[in-house]
Image (cartoon, rainbow, N blue to C red; front, side, top):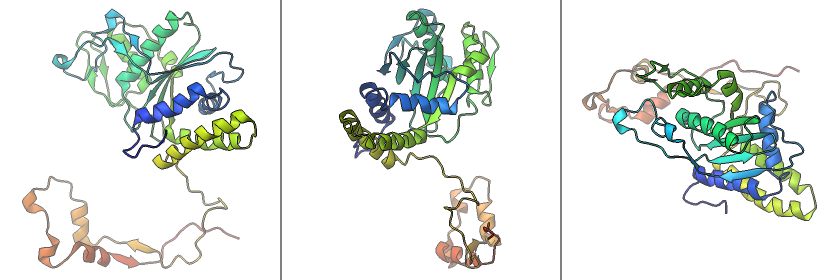
Length: 317
């Protein structure tokens, strides 16, 4: 478990992380996970305290209502390539006392706006089916970006309704427009409240923190949990899932440079700059061959590096 010499896929990540969440005690991983989301969205009511019942479903399958089957297609896809879609399979669905989370997990920077739209409508259908339509629904996107997606990146126009989707439309706006295209009333404020995002880098940090907490406890349950969480952290370490470190000049842990006169500065000589800034299409016959001119690339780059005093941030006192 957790070791994949051929590489770790998004399904591996999803199965291992949420699989542990499904079977470990709730306070071992589920509660810290919900607390993490709440910390990023303090205005939402995730209700991670005093959980009476929780159900974690991996890749559950839901049948589409008949009226959606031909409508659930990417609107930017040619009509002749579209086909009916009979089932929606979210990566994870988490049912809690006060809310339901529908999770789309990606191991990439991609944002499939159409998937999020379909899962949003399906989430509303799920809660109506279980008689919980009045509680909160959250659609959570989990990917490897360092910030929430700001646009849907889709261009499409529906010929029947005349509604157009722009690449700059936000994910909630995309969902609202797609719902209108198929005749489903949706409120933009409700959609915006529902849509959440976190990164796998947050999960990596969560694995580290929960492992430290479990290691500090001596009970038998914590000892068992520690073994699994150690494997999860090892996998996260291997994938490099840590939040980006932001440089701060006033941070005492930052390295201060006293003698900075020897820091090399890259100066691009005019002939090299013309090559770097060249923006037109380059035909094969026009690609420069430095070795024929007696100017190897390595030598050319070495000649472009000169030493010069440059200003850097320095800590006074």
